[in-house]
Length: 433
Image (cartoon, rainbow, N blue to C red):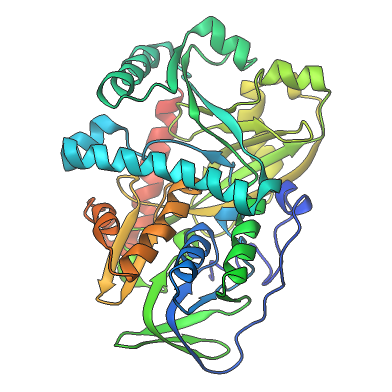
């Protein structure tokens, strides 16, 4: 089965609240015949579009190829949450890479959020940016550890934009009895991800990058220069960046052995009465909870509840996304039981074994950045900038990310499915305990 067409039609955005409320640029042409460039980017999501913007700023001749449309994949379908930190908490990173490198990774995460804020302000003001992410603990026993972590960030990292939230305040800020406390990070926030991607595409094109849509890469021939073979022509490039994340499939097998696709789903309700919506989320923060199969949600600009939750493993989406995601939504907000659902959609993201991004130099002139594990709005955008730095000869920060170990899935790409499914079932059962 083909991951690029298992759930979607070529060149058509999914029917989501995002696609219904965003004006797509282009369409950009498919490649026609053979071309040459300094850098060929494969994938038109946050990583690829950010790399195209930054490389064009540096004076490189850039060609970006996207099998569907820019922003088509997870970059245009996600929960829109822009979080600080890496996907692993700093305690775990300190053990994994040492305190000095863990501090550098923390600093990169703060830069990634600021980069999104800056791009929204300059290139995508229509995407908006609302401050604040509530981290909601679904078990009371998790609250002390969460509060200890807040104090660690305050004391060890000098980060004062996060604070603890007790049970009473959590239920005030997030009108649900499901949570027992947690924390509020005002350094993060939320945005309209598809509008953000579209703003980045327009900016990259305005800076001189050539964007090609409905152009599928079938092979990359290593060499100097490399040859990127597509279904509509060939690109000769001094450098190549793989930026496909969950939609890579088996196109690059070394990356596929470390980055695995999983599916996640979002519902958008009908517009809610303003007072009712404020009872759900008091200060328009985004919310993400402590479950392994995470629930994440926020209000849209027109007062819809955008609720993400549930996962599936395998290329095909379930037939009834509404039924699948309504279950966790109503566990959190039973008061939405009679609310109409206007949109339901799925997307595919890339995860790694330890949930840290997988950056790598596959050969001297072929790079890859992916595996953001649900933390990609900020880190994928920064990933494109770091790849641009590496191409320009300033590889230190790209290499910092590349030196974080990301193991191969046991059995590689061929056998990763049954092992992951078994693990996910175990963790989902743990969520219920």
